[in-house]
Length: 550
Image 1 (tube, rainbow, N blue to C red):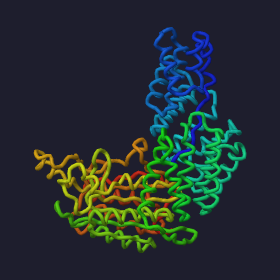
Image 2: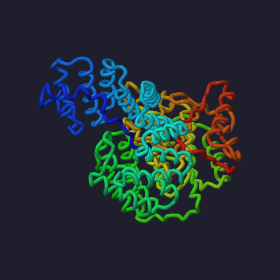
Image 3: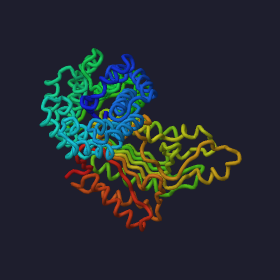
Image 4: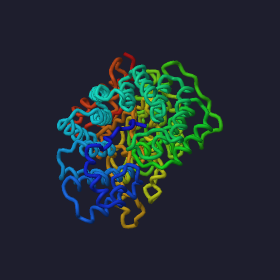
C-alpha cells in the first residue's frame, strides 16, 4: 500500500555475455539468462554454470547478475544484493548492476544505501530515466517528496512514454496534498497503458481521498480484472502483488461505504494471495486485522454521515492503578488532560481510565472499526508498555506476571493496531507516553527459578515492526513516543508526566503543524528532565497536518 511499483532496468547492456553462455551450454545458458525462466530453475541453472568455474570477468558477472534476477523474483533481496555485489567487484562501473542492487536495497527499506547506488549509476552515466525513477522511489520512501518529485519529473523528461513514472509522480503529488495533480498524472498513465492494473489501484486511492467511494470501488474492480487477465506488470514485481493491492484497496473502500460483507470477502481474497514482497506482506497484515474486526462486530454497524472534512476521532487511555505492580499516579491525570484538549479541538473522544484487559481490548477494537469512516484519528496511551520479542504491548491494569507465555495475550499488541490502521487516505496520529519502566523486571528476577514467567520483557518500547515482519507504519501515519526506543520515560513528580504535561501545553496551539508541535514538546521535555528523556517520533504523513485550526 505504501509504495508504487518501481521500474528496474531491463538488463540490455549487461547481457552482452549472454550469447556466449548459450553457446557454451545450450540448456543451462538460456535457463540462466532468460527473464521468463521460473525463479528456482533460473537460480539452479546459474549455480551449475558458476560451479563449472569456466567463466571469469564480465561473463561471470553476467551469471551473477542473472542469478540475482532469479533471487529478485523470489523476493530474496539479501541474495540479490550479495550477487550484484559479487558482479560489481568484477565490473565496478556497471550502471545496470548498481541500479539492480539499489533496487534491492530499496525493497528492503534501506533507502539511503539505495540512493547512493542510484546516484553512483547516474554519475557513471549516461542519463537514465529508469534510474531517476528508481531514485525517486527511494526519496519517496524517505518522505523526501520534493526530491522525489524532481526525480520523477526528470524521468518523464528522459522517458516521456513511461506510464510508471507518471504513476509514481502521481503518488508524490498525493503526498504533497495535490490530489488534482495526482489524478492528472494517474489519468495520463492509464491513457498510455490502459491495461496496467496497478495504476487503476493507485487512482482508487485518490478517489477515496476525494470522497468518491463508488469510483474507487470501480477502479479496484478494473484492476482486479486486469491483474487476473494477465495484463502488463512491472517485470520485477513479484507475482500476485498487484492483485493483493487491488483486493485490499477495494476492501477498505467497501468498509468505508458500510458494505461489510463485501469488505470481508475482499480481505479474505487478500489473505489468499502469496505475499513475497514487503508491500504484499503489509497489505495482508492489514487485511487480517480488518477482517477480524469485522468478524467480531455486530451484524450491522451504522455508517455515520460526515461533512466534507470527514470525522475526527480519538481514543485516550490512561492506566495507572495496576493490581500486581506499583501504581503509576499520573497516567489517569495525563489521559484526562489530553482528552479535554482533543474535545476542545472538536474530536469525538472515547476515554478510558484504568482499564482491565477485556475493556481495553473492546475499546481498542471499536476505535479501529470506527477508523474506516474517519478522516483523522488520534490514539493516546499513558501507562505501562513493554516489548516482548521486539513487539510492543500496552499493559492493562489486571495483567498477571505469572501468566507465562500467555502473557502477551493479556496485553494489547501495539503493532497489531498499526497494521489495522494502515491506510494512506487517513491521517493517523499515535502517541504513547508509555515505557515508564518495565513492570515485569522485578517479578522476572524474583520468580526466575520457578520459571513462572516464560517470556522476556525489556524496558522501553521498540521501534514499530518493519514491513518484513508483516506489519507496517504506513503512509499517512505519525507515531510519537515519550522517549527514544528502548529507553525508559519518567512518570514525573507533579500531577502529570513531563511528556504529557508538555503535550497538553502545545497540542491546542492554533496553526501549529503537528510535527512542529512535537518538536516544541521534545525541547521542553529535554530541558525539563536535564537530558534524561528525549521524546522520539517517526512520520510518514502525507503533507502538513494541523490538530488545531490555523
